[in-house]
Amino acid sequence: MAESADLPITGGRGRILARTRLDFWLDALLLVAYTLAYSLGFTGLATHEWLGIGLGAVLLIHITLHWDWVIRTTRKLLRPGGRERFIWLVNLLLLLSMTLCIASGILISEVALPQLGITPPASSFWRQMHDTTATLTLILVPIHAALRWRWIVAVARRLAAWRPGRSR
Amino acid sequence: MKFLRHLTAVVLTVAVIVGLGLLWAHASGGGGTRIGGGPGPAPSRQVLLRLRQIKAGVITVGPADNGFHLADTRNLIRTGEIEAALAAVVITVSAVRRRRRRTRRGAATKA
Image (spheres, each protein chain N blue to C red):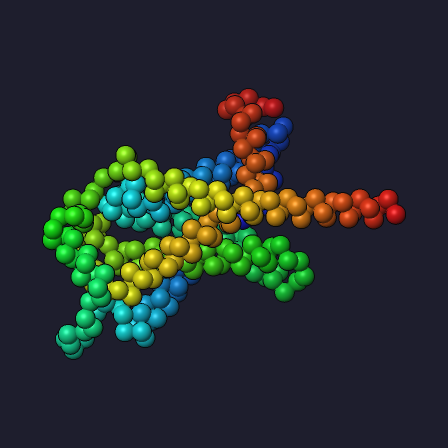
């Protein structure tokens, strides 16, 4: 999502770029999957665990798609200008907490991994880590999304008006 | 090709973070693998209570808990509310700052 805001939304004749559409729908999918995965009481343990593992895989693609932004912004960190630096910091914290949350979730898995024949060693350290990082992600995910709310609104408006095969 | 290169970089970054986490766990002695076979610390009161509840069938864990609890949407609604509230705060702050910047720029142009 971070890099998407810097990219043009539309191509020739006002058509939405395929990359913009991919970013938008992938981000929407991630947000919905994250919200469901966080709501353990609603999903139940098995769905929570499998959803978390799936979320991890899709997150790798999400970060890969925005890797150019990561490199570009990291290089520009020493220059003045607060907003991009703040977004970079939020994204870094989110990367750390989300990675540790998913990794610790896998290490304390009670259903998904045993179903695959793997029994992870039970540990209160990883359980504590999972609880703490999950709370952190709940704070950081909406901030991460809201920092690009103008891009989200702009693309959503275009998508609402867009019809496949029709140039505007 | 570029995608694969970037994916490799991302996987390496994630591996470094997980590696640091494992080191942290090892350093704090809570990695979950106990070498030497000591008895370890006694379980806390909460853990004992949870075990008693599992034995009594008050709470279920493991394969029995494998589906959506569609009737229990409170948890989902609460998550959505927290996310919406935090996003609303960020959007409001961002909009106010943008408006202030525009006003200041407008005043500077007029002057």
